[in-house]
Image 1: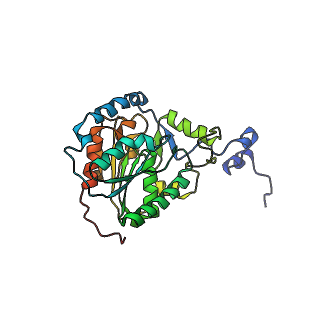
Image 2: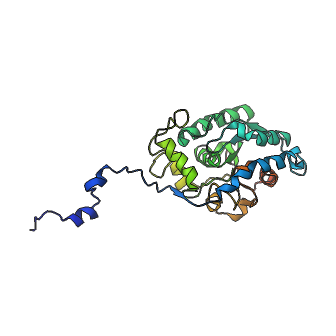
Image 3: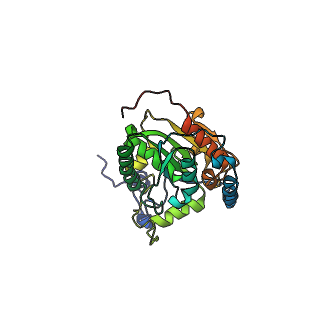
Length: 282
C-alpha cells in the first residue's frame, strides 16, 4: 500500500489554499454579478426625459387607458427612494390608480430584508383595499418585486419591471457594481450599514438570491419594460423569456425608464391588459 504524502499538484486539485492565497477573501469574485461595458454616459440625459414627460399629454392622462382605483406599490431602484418616483406615482393617481409609497429611504439595505418589509406592507394594503396589489419596480425595485411575488403570489395582481436585471445574474456597469462592493465593505456610514459580506451576491443563500436564480413558476402576469440603450445594466438580463411580456423603449436611458413618455404609455398598457388566467385563490 502506497502511503506516500500527496504531491503539491494533488493538493491543488483538492482545492487546498497554499501560500499567500490562504488569506484570500472568498467573496472577491461574485458569480452572481458581472461587470459589463454599458453606455453609462447616456444616463446624463435623463433630466431631458423628465422634462419631456412633464410636457407630454400622456402625463396628463391623455391617450392611455385609465384604472379604477387598483392599488399599486411603486418600488424605487438602487440608491433611489420614494422621492425619485413622485412623477410616476402622480401620473398613476391621475389615470385612476391608487399608488402607494414603498417607505424606502435609500434602496441600499439588504434586499432580502427590504423584500420582507414590503411583503408586510402589501399585506396591509390588501387588508385595507380587499384587492390584489400591482407591483411596479424600477431596476432593483423590479427585482424586489420578483422576490415579493415568490413570497405572496396570492396577493399580487401583476408585476411590471422597468430596467430590472432579474435574469440569472446581474450584468451592470462597473461603476454600479463598484458602489455595491463599496457598501458591502462596510464603508457606507449612513447607507448600506446593515449589509454583510455576501449580501445580494451569488454567495448568499437568502430567499432574495434564490428567487432571482431559481424562481418558482407563479400564476401571476409578469411584464418587463427595458431599453437596449440602458447605460447601467445589460438589457438582455431585463427581459422576460416570453417575448409577448416584453416592451422595448430603446430611446430611453436606465433612469429615464421611469420618466420617458413612451415608457409610461407602456406601463398603462400593461396595467390595463386583460389577463386570461385562473384565479390565484385570493
